[in-house]
Length: 162
Length: 290
Ligand SMILES: [Fe+2]
Ligand SMILES: [Fe+2]
Image (cartoon, rainbow over all chains, first blue to last red; front, side, top):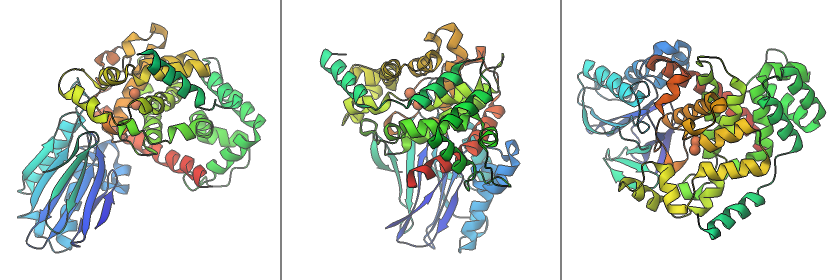
C-alpha cells in the first residue's frame, strides 16, 4: 500500500484502492477526511488556521492552510475525480483541533478551526459522521481508499480506528 | 534523581561535543544587549567555514536574491542575525539535535524542526512585547530550548508508555512532571546542566531551564523566557513536536504581563512563523546533503 502524504496546508484526493492518504502530527490543526463509498474515493485536507484574511498571499500559495480557502477546493477536487457535486452524500470525519493544557481563549485555535470548518460544512449541507477532536494530544491520521477506514496514531498511545 | 541516574546524565553530557569557539562567541554577542550587526559580520569574517556556508545559503534556492550576493556584509544583512545563529548552531549542534529521540518515540529530524519552528515563533512573539525586546535573542534561545531532550531521551528509552500512563492516571500534572516521575529529572533541568557545562550565556541558560515554568525565571530574563515558552507551545500547536510529549504541557497565562495579542493576531503569528520557517529549514537542511 502506498501513502499519499499531506503536509500542513496540503489537500489531496484519490480513487486508487491501493493508496492511503495520510497526514502527520495534527496539533491544533484539523484534518477533514472525506469518503465516497459508492465510487471508493477519498479526500483529505490538513487545515492549520480558520480564516485566510490574516495572510491572503499564503492562502493563494497554499489554500489548504486555511479552512475558508481550502475546504471548498477539497470538495471540488473530489467532484473532479467523480465524486458527487458539492460533496452530497460524502461521509465526513474530523480529526485534530487539540490544544495545550490550561489554555486560555486566545490559544484555543483548535476550537476556532473546528467551528470554522463546521460552518463551511453546514453551508454545503454536510456534517461529520464521526470525529476525534480536542484534547491535548497530537494525532497522525490516515484513510484507506479501498474501504474508507480511518486510523489514528499518537506517539506513546498507539493506533486506533475512528 | 538517584546517584546512578545523575552519573548517567553527567556522562551523556560529557559525550556531546562542545560547540565551536566561534559559535560560543556568536551566542555571547547575540546575548549582549549592546551589540550591533557589525559585531556579527566581523565574527563571520574571521571564520572561513562560516563565511562559505553563509554565502552558499544566501544564494540558495530557498532565498534566491535577485542578484548573487558575494560580500559577507551584504549576506549577513540580507539573512539577518538569526540565520547566522541558525547556521552556526546547525554546524555545532546539528548532530545532537538531529538524533531520533527514542524516549519520546520521535524520529530523527523532528527535534530540529521543533527547535527551529520554536525559534521563529519566539521571534514573532517578541514583536508583540509590551516593552520591546531582543527578538534575535528570542530566536537563539528558542533554537536551544530543548537541548536536554536528546540526553533525557536515553533515560526514558522504552518508557514513553509509562510516562503517558502516569499522566493519564493523574499521577503527574503534565509531561514534565511525568518524565520526572519516571526518570527522576525533567528535560529542562538536564538542558540546564548541559548549558552550564557549555557555559552558555545566562539568558539562554535561563530560557532552557524555565521554558515550561517561565514564572520561576529571574525577573530580568522573564520576557525572554516567556517568549520561548509561547514559541514552544506555538510549535506544538502547529504540529512541530517531538512525539509522545506533544501539547502535554501547561500554558502560563501570565505571559499577558509581557505580551499582548488577540486570538486573530495569534493566527497571524502562526502563519508568519510558517512563512519564515520554510526557507530556513530548506536551506539549513540543504547543508546536510552536501
Ligand atoms: Fe521543552
Ligand atoms: Fe520544546
